[in-house]
Length: 192
Image 1 (cartoon, rainbow, N blue to C red):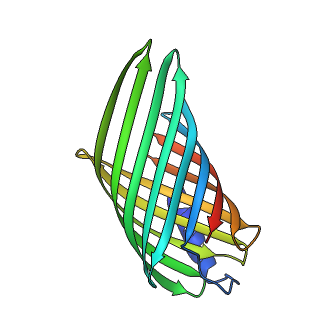
Image 2 (tube, helix red, strand yellow):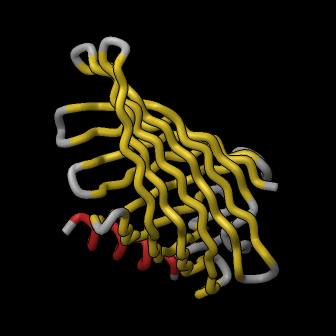
């Protein structure tokens, strides 16, 4: 229900946006992230991501993330990689709908007393969403993503907000939920 309310609020705000520009797609970001698994274990780490327009509407997007923690002497590392091709469609002067098809890779490494083991699998992702400039300085984004890795499927929901201090620099906060995994992030974004 929360997902429906958040997406509805974002879509309703599209009609009231006062911004004269559309969302910017040429950007790079670095984020601090906190990953909560089953409300029991919390991993922290970083993520880097970026996107670049290819012409008017197509764009490439990529991200890499690492989160880790030491839980009762066992060290966990969770790494993700995503590379995709997307398409954006302007629905107003200040909002874009978008879709992305991506290659997804996930690795989990566990270390204990000098011994380690890792599991790595890959698959694909399909994401749809909306990005909207609420003002010249504030952007909101919401998306749903379906991921299929090693015949295991998951759907995640993401929301984020950016505040622009200058033409090139913004800070943002984000939240995503995929099954029993909740992720909070704080980002620094550079537009080029």
